[in-house]
Image (cartoon, rainbow, N blue to C red; front, top):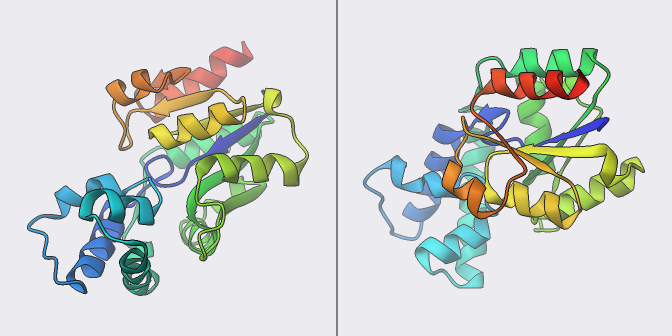
Amino acid sequence: MKNILFDLDGTLTDPFIGITKAVAYALKSQDIIVSSLETLKPFIGPPLDDSFQKYYHMNHKDCWIAIEKFREYFNEKGKFENKVYKGIEEVLKQLKDNGYTLYVCTSKPLVFAREILEYFHLDIYFKEIYGSELDGTRKDKADVIAYCLECEQIEAKECIMVGDRMHDIIGAHKNHIPCIGVLYGYGSIEEFQQYHCDYIVENEEGLLKFFYEKDN
């Protein structure tokens, strides 16, 4: 297990404010007013078009109009209305110092993922960052992971995924990679159990402990 693939939202950073405000902005453009940003938490993690269809029953055309509005807000303000989880930088530093090769595999458009990681100075810990394209290419986590394996010429048996939602588990398993679910993000123990997450840790300290015990 030489390579660790990290999800971004809900795993490295907490994007609650930026994402929910951008979703609210997009919905308002279609005359949908939300009473609380808390109701938009389910938008954190899954591809945007899937969520707009699921929660607001939008057709394909309206979905992409909403996504363009989301990006309008997100690109200007939302991408930096974000914060690094406490202790996560130390986790990345120690893992890298201990010889692991780290990657980011996110469904977020690559252009935004790079900007966020550079803004918070986390990019220095990763060999490479992989994400989706603005046209929707590789929005599925399994496709992002597969693309990472292909580009880096690494084998699934030498990798493990770290994420906070079912999409990380499903994407990892489709590529024959085990997954660690982190409970400090936006998933739950019930979600992890339902999707047969291989390992579960409560916090950032538990994540570091997991790899320490694996090495010893």
